[in-house]
Length: 487
Image (cartoon, rainbow, N blue to C red):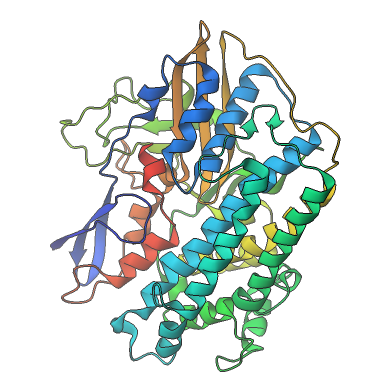
């Protein structure tokens, strides 16, 4: 057996190390280390509850809106405030702007540049990968960066700035928009749509969103060959994925969690909630969540705890620990979260078919993310059209001096939860479970590896590789955000 320490990884958000035990050219076991501690739970304790809206966006520079929305929902739950329809639509647009920018960034800047590596030089698509996805100079990389910059100007109107926007409130959005601004916002969304329809898909978004099976995806893929200008970046990924057998790489635990994304005024969420396993969707029971700190450099006194009563207390010299990340479990089970979970919970036939065939793998995770990018842009157009200028955007309300609340929602990378307890008008406890906390969790008290740890088992390692390329594909397919993990 050979032991490899891989990391720190580039092209991930934050610090990440992975220890691999390799036997006969395959990963036998993996231990994932989030090597940074930040302590937002301690920072928030003793402060006024509204202060959370200032502090939690600073957890992350790319997921800040997601943290703001989760905190606002926790405070709304604490106080019983309900957003008006305008506030719900605008909050969804603000969150979707960040989430879709993250999907775009992941595909063009984090994931696809791995296929430019010399290890793939003999493949028939390699020269095209170099032309499109070479970091900083690739034709499509440069186009995506420009599109992302223009996309974020949406938040100038809606939220004043990004990251660390301050317009999100428990009662809705503190920034009302008028009819002229709504027209300009719709124009910006349609500009982003044109980028996607020209570069990413080389097809209308509606056509991509309507793909309903692997057979339909294959037929669409082969309708424009590699040399055809209409062979957009999704088709190019499918070409690479087939050749590199990405559908066989990085199978996760097979159980998928979604809290539900983008709540609607009439009830429910635009993207579904629940736990998908073995072809069936079951209701989510948030009371079944527990965080296990057995292998974290954190106190595990009292055993696994629900986040509402959880403790985050550093123990840096704790024997046997190997990460700052806790191990969240749902009814004792390891789960995976992300765009793939949202699409399964929504019953999208393409992702249901692909996961039924291959499971949660590198291939299915990336397809789900690109499908969601197309679907949510269409939803954003509907939300903006539904805004009624002149009607309320925010419901004022007073936070109680005692109580607790939970804010559950979906960031780009998956299920995000904030739990707050207030005593005597001050925060008594604040706990956060981020998407990468779920996906990159360590082992629990029963020795069960987290989602990424299990997905890495069986990954091929070529002789002489110190940073195995297959391992990098698997890690990046989850799109980790380590600073949110260790908050």
